[in-house]
Image 1 (spheres, protein in one colour):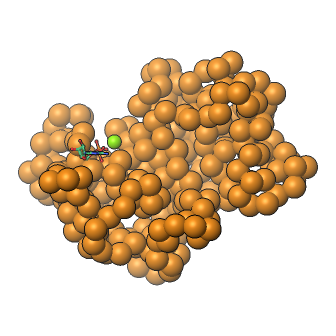
Image 2 (spheres, rainbow, N blue to C red):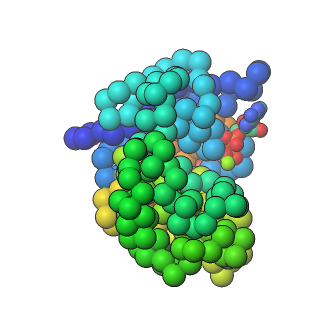
Amino acid sequence: MADPLVVLDGVNKHFGDLHVLKDIDLTVGRGEVVVVIGPSGSGKSTLCRTINRLETFESGTITIDGEPLPSEGKALARLRADVGMVFQSFNLFAHKSILDNVTLGPMKVRGKKKAEANKRAMELLERVGVGHQAGKYPAQLSGGQQQRVAIARSLAMDPKIMLFDEPTSALDPEMINEVLDVMTQLAQTGMTMIVVTHEMGFARRAADRVVFMSDGEIVEQATPEEFFTNPTSDRAKDFLGKIL
Ligand code: ADP
Ligand code: MG
């Protein structure tokens, strides 16, 4: 790959006796959008959490932009800022305004001044379509709006890569597309993204590559076109048969 940004090489992780990541080799290029799909319990969330160092791992290496994952201290805080993560649950600070939710990280971790942080936050909130809600509190927004704020909050840190772990799974159906649209636009800006999702329409539309996981392993990876029309493994065929 011409310009790898995230490289996992032989990564193994256990929870007790459970081998959840089995010799994972995965390279994500700068600007690439990788969609990770697979059955529940296959290790998709653990993969994201391991890349963000929310989980430890026992063997193998992970590098981000050429640097090995730090395990503690300032380097770890910097890594967390470089790797944005959006979860199923929005995790906004309930007692802070939407604007404050977005400016907090840049001021604390990136050392930005308030005026500068506010300006950037407003740009991002406009971009995800909730600029007019900046003075409100999270509970006053719909789930789809809150998730778009969560995306803006991550982007405010100027991450090198964005990880999304089933960002639309907790949303009412009518709100799913407004979040996927923001993600699709983000993909078009050249952001490097790893997206765990069951939204196959998004995968077809936005992914450069689909990675299929099952039982802790990467079983197949291919372009969406190839993967959806001609999956090679029985496990992928079985999975697609159930969801499509
Ligand atoms: P997915 O996101 O693909 O549904 P997960 O990464 O959440 O899968 O989980 C992979 C496996 O690891 C599952 O069997 C799950 O029960 C187990 N697991 C996940 N987190 C923990 C944990 N903190 N402690 C013990 N087992 C866990
Ligand atoms: Mg999961």
